[in-house]
Image (cartoon, rainbow, N blue to C red):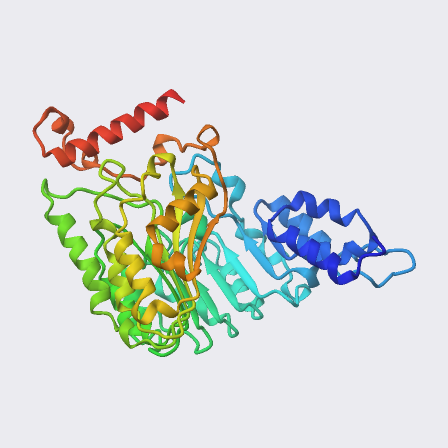
Length: 475
């Protein structure tokens, strides 16, 4: 190990840390003295506190001196100096069967944490924020003790406007704000406002990144109509929506602040909802048209500074009708509005791909996407990424398939395919039926639809859901 330059050792450890392999990182710390500082930096960079026992153990470690290494007594800094991200609780997916108590943070213990011992703390994540009437000192301590935080992530909370006002006023150095579940748990319930009035605070001018998820309408009204957010303030915005949602909140945010964005992430939430309405296709057609109009009449055409575009939720929504493009027709409509000559990366993100989806991924109009990405203002895009979070389809097979669907982009050499996790059919982790958010007609009308009283479209939806339920019961 002594023959390796320290720079190479650091690169190796950084690569292990990028894979989030804690077990290997701990092994690295025991390999050699020269490996300890860099490994320790990664091991303690993010701290997650849940039950009171985890808080007491961390507080004890904060007040303890670092281990002393013989002949190099000052090699290791205190643990608190290594903490850059503090997580208070772990967000649990809606309808999850997991024991939420094990992952919740008890705010009765927050006063035991001394933020002054963590001088490099820049990110604070809170799984669920309490109302002051639940435990008033908790919110007071939160607003007074973490003034060094630049990134605040609130995953869930039903807050009065005055509570949100107090919280946002307690972070004077804030540059990034998230008001929704993190990436793994996107859903329509994040941070919501309840009660009369609006937050009497304006986001500080330093806040340039905003992650809203599926936006709460009162929050959007505060940001857009009540002066909570300046028009030219944001450089990064993330929004999600659901099929057949009312898109007014998304539309309002785009109209308000899309002209100055350099990063935009937008698309379907996870898991997507498909909800047939009123016994006809009227609701579906109205949503498709409104989704296309959302981008057609947005100010994105006037944006000349956009560098990164991420399109979320590109996976199939309706396996019973995989060749229909309507529910994803907004993707070409969005690309058609982009005029920025600085755009460098376009990412089409799929959360999952099953083997059943492998027949040409036909729910997206790839011909239109290929033409738009290879001609006109988007022809200068350097990277077109297809990112799959979890896939039954092998990366090589998927690469060939996508290359055939995007021949112009492939010929230009800008296509990239990333599969974060390959998962064969035999190892696919199936969710219990109670966790499924796929809504069908059986959720909103009487079930006799399968006996021929409804349209063939709804019968297909009902049959799909029933088959899925039997499949889950058999496992």
